[in-house]
Length: 194
Image 1 (tube, helix red, strand yellow):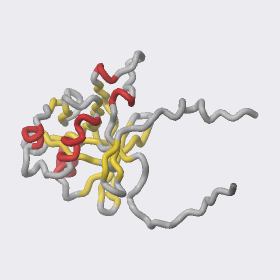
Image 2 (cartoon, helix red, strand yellow; image 1 turned 180 degrees about the vertical axis):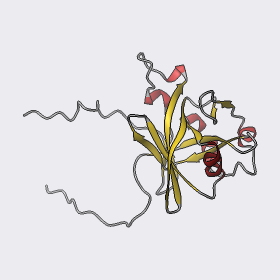
Image 3 (cartoon, rainbow, N blue to C red; image 1 turned 180 degrees about the horizontal axis):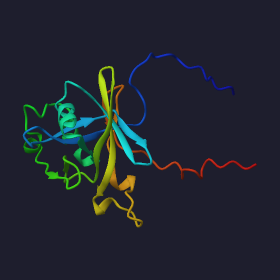
Image 4 (cartoon, rainbow, N blue to C red; image 1 turned 90 degrees about the horizontal axis):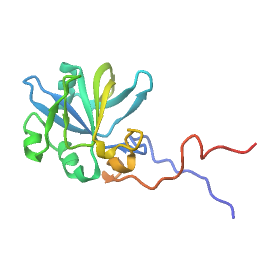
């Protein structure tokens, strides 16, 4: 049986899998903590370890990051998907999102940004670059430290994705998903016999 490998063009759009559902922590000009959901993000460098996030200039978090040159990446677990969605629905300029959700902002000791105590994994970042790319500005944040709840660490003190249970975002239909099954060990399953 021959498989049809033809592809259908669906046009240029912001679509890639997987897309994270991260919550970015910042302080505003008055020192108030803010949290905003961001899907445009990912690892951008290994050495120094860096992440990138992209925000529109119109967002409150954009202004906060430009002023403080710092942010945290808070990786929510599935149990906090409701709060994660809420953080992306309202502006911190008008609402105290922490008061509304009951989650706890914690002041980072390393960067001028808050992180969320209840989320299992936090990256504390200082801004090292920013680039305007049309509608969004991309911020490159050097990871100064990672904080992890002990409950999500494996025997080598490394976060275990199956314990973190991160939230993934599907931009094409605006749905949230959990992680799937293990498919194999990286840099091992692909070995081909010569």
